[in-house]
Image (tube, rainbow, N blue to C red; front, side):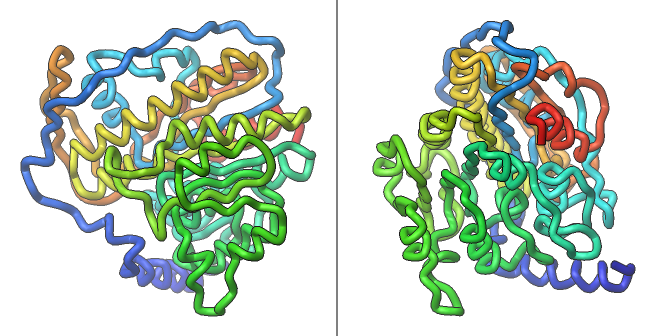
Length: 383
């Protein structure tokens, strides 16, 4: 793809920001949102560091969208000095630049993490020539592993979409939804119901999913009851509400997915996204960021419970980019107070953390390209 084509696609992508699904990027200037003052703290457990094998049977990839080091330490402060992330002894950094920009967007960042190739901002599972690239999820599926996606955003949004869809522009939500039907993914839970059911082409993808054997459910409590079979949990028309308002519980959704996917004797690959850490960064809202960071960390706790018991599961936690240029201008470990300051309302170019636990975790330390992360996962799974 030449420079003019990349710029054209970027302009198309920028136009899509006007759609309602991108309204979370409107930055709030309310000072009261810059200080997180209180919240219920939770106990952080310590998990064993011994495993059954040198290579994993299962991989749980967890992406805190917009989660930089400051977001992590804001969570540590708010929870009195500890997070479940304390259990990760192998820590590194990821460089997030895309093929077209020094500062990536979630589409290019997600595609780098799903395919091992850099692409232009706005691209979903395609290279700079808009040619589809096989993702780690698709490779795992091709090898007979069970696969899943869980997200607090619409499941058609940039990061989860990058693991299952192949579109030239991230705003092509209905085309992204249709791409789900081209796969045999076992479990997906998130928002985005209207992109499957209220479409310009009049297709009702929920009925097509049912015809393929999926249980298509909207009520989170019904979603959590599913123990076997294929599951499409679409808990909101677009994005789920912010934590703690949303009805979709991310830790419970992750547990539901683990229970279903682990029935595959060959293993599984799942990507779980804490989407709205990013939303809080766009809004320069420290309360929003901390709430979402703590929710994401408690989901990491559920992943650790599963992995520690299983002994053959690798967990990799990282981010696609940092959002907001968050600095911690003040805080108190005893009270959990966090005071945030911001450089702006969009993504930044800083490196983001990478945490790994389980068989193969030692490969993820040091400074690496974001594209190195899926390549290492592919190698460990024999893909």
